[in-house]
Image 1 (tube, rainbow, N blue to C red):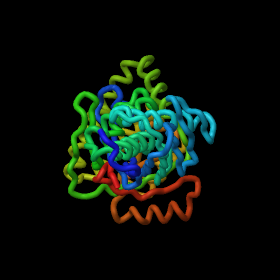
Image 2 (image 1 turned 180 degrees about the vertical axis):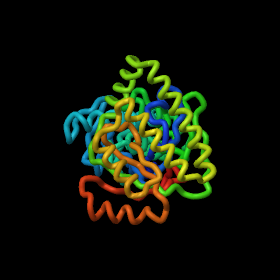
Image 3 (image 1 turned 135 degrees about the vertical axis):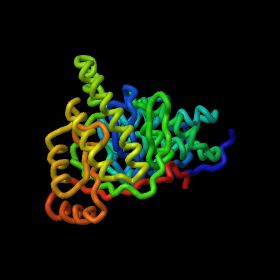
Image 4 (image 1 turned 90 degrees about the vertical axis):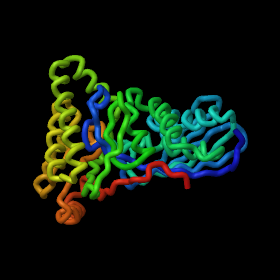
Length: 329
């Protein structure tokens, strides 16, 4: 396949998990939603064969001969950078090219807090690099991005790359893939960033240890998670958002049981409920990260004003659902 241009730009949305995180790894369903905050990847062909990634998140480095040869910020950036370099190389290999690339990443939501930053980076880079050659399909972007994301999160279910590629709200199971959930009204969501970063890999491992040492209890919790997600699917379809909120509260109880919540997460959840939220829970791996809540529309803006004026220990985000998914600009 011939190189058709020397510069491209693509973007992908972040995501929240409304229901089923962690249990989805073991076959239970999850419900995810793409959010209206994005990662942008700008790709420019350069001389030589080195792939360089620079990011507004102060992440940077270069790669040659399949290895990282320099990074700007120590070991943690390298852990994310190396798979992203491999992501770009995998696309080039698929197209039969070995060329240098300068890749600039800009994220418009915090990284490392459970909003799908690694998946969004993989999707955006895959789309941008492949569009140097042709107009890629979303199916191909999703497949290649998922392969790359699994270099970062080895036990990834693939759900994050799916939602970052296709957008919208989806019901996902590992065995059957995803199906889009059609909604009549947008979900009135609010997000609070605890500003506590976490290691998704460590939390996934801790849940596995819980499962292995408490299998009967875990099986019961996974069964409950499945029922909650199935009820939530029906509630979302019928715009029963009060019902969705109640199910979010039930889901949070399960996440507490498997040990992925935290004191700060629970304090923020309690605050949301006290201020009139229908429901609130952690979203993503837990252990910090973000809390997502569902408010009656008439209390949504009031809550944000109160948070901004009274609570400086967390970062609030109003959210809308993104229905576009990956875009080539």
